[in-house]
Image (tube, rainbow, N blue to C red):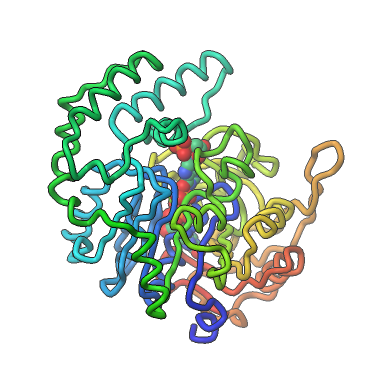
Length: 412
Ligand code: GDP
Ligand code: IMO
Ligand code: MG
C-alpha cells in the first residue's frame, strides 16, 4: 500500500470508466484511510456507492464514501445538486452506526438544491419522453436533470440561500415551474422538507474552494470522489442516455474548484466485465442466460433504485477512450471474482466499421479468486486477463477487487 500511495501523490481522483457502479465506493473507502480530506465533486443522489465493512453494508448517495473514516475532513463541492432530506438521512444513519460526520462536514455554498418539484419534473419528463420516443432515459428519478437544467438556466437555488428565508424563493419557483412544466409546487411541503436541513446544516455551508485551497497549502492530502462515470458524461458519454453533469476527472476538478495541474493521480475504476442501468446503447450487452448469470453472480441490482443492471462484457475501446479523456494513471479493476465460473471470457477489442464488436475470447480460470490479496496467488489465466487489459490500455492494474469487502483487494 505504501508504494501505491507514494505513486498516487497528495491529490488523487477516483473516476468510473464505464456506465457507473464500477465499485468506486469501495476503493475510495480503502484509500481514504490514508487521505486527510475526502470530497464529492459532482452529481447528486443519483449516485449509490456501496461499502462493505465486516459484513455490514453502507450506501452513500451524497456524502463522500471516505466519511466512514473518522479522521477525514468531508467536503461536498460546488458541482453537486443536493436533495437535502436525503443528505440529512444519510448523516443520521451514519450517526446511528456510531460515525458522527457533522462536525467535520463542509458543504459548498455554491452547490445547488434539489427540491421535491425537481423530482416531479424528472418523472414528468421521463413520461413525456416515453410517449414521444417510445422509451425514457431511464433516470434515477432523483431530480438530477431538472436541477442542473435550472442551474444552467440561472434559475437554480444555491445552498447559500438555505441560511435565509426560503418562502419567497419557493414562490418564485412555483410560478415558473407551473408555467414551464405544468408541475405544481407545494411550497408548504417543500418548506417542511427543508426545515430539518436548515437547522442541521446551516453552519456547515462554507466556501469549500477556499477550504480545499487552504488544505492544499497546509500540505494535506485530498481524495476526490467521482460519481457516475465516463460513459454517462454529459459531453463525452452516450448522449442523450447520460446524466446531466460532467463526470470526468476534469469535471471533478471543476466541481471542486481545483486547478487541473494540482492533480497528482487519477484512478480509473472498471469492472472486469460491464453493466449499465437505464436505457441507451450497450454494444457488449448479453441479454439472455449469460447476462442473467453475470447479474446473479455480481449482485447487479442498482444501489439507488434497486433496478436490475444490464450486464455484458468488457469493451477495450470504451476503456481506451476513458483513459484518454480522464488521464488515468492507475486502474482499479473490480469484481474479478464474478468471472470465476466462466470457461471463456469474451472481450471486445475493437469496433468494426459496421459498428459491430470485434471479439477476443480469453481463457477463464474456473476457480475461486474470492478474497485473494496477492496478484501472484491469482490463477495464471486471471493474471493474464489483467495483463491483457494493461497491455491494451497502457495503464497498470494497480488495484484489483476480489470481493465486496474492504479487505478483498489486491494492491500491487
Ligand atoms: P459505485 O457506484 O461505483 O460505488 O458502485 P456500487 O456500489 O453502485 O456497485 C458496486 C457493487 O459491487 C457494490 O455492491 C459493491 O459492494 C460490489 N463490489 C465492489 N467491488 C467488488 C469486487 O471486487 N467483487 C465483488 N464481488 N463485488 C464488489
Ligand atoms: P454511481 O455514482 C449507474 C444513470 C441512470 C440513467 C442516467 C441518467 O453509483 O456510479 P440521472 O438520474 O442521472 O438523470 O439518470 O444515468 N445513472 C447511473 N447509473 N450509476 C450511477 O451512479 C448513476 N447515476 C446516474 O441510470 O441511465
Ligand atoms: Mg453506484
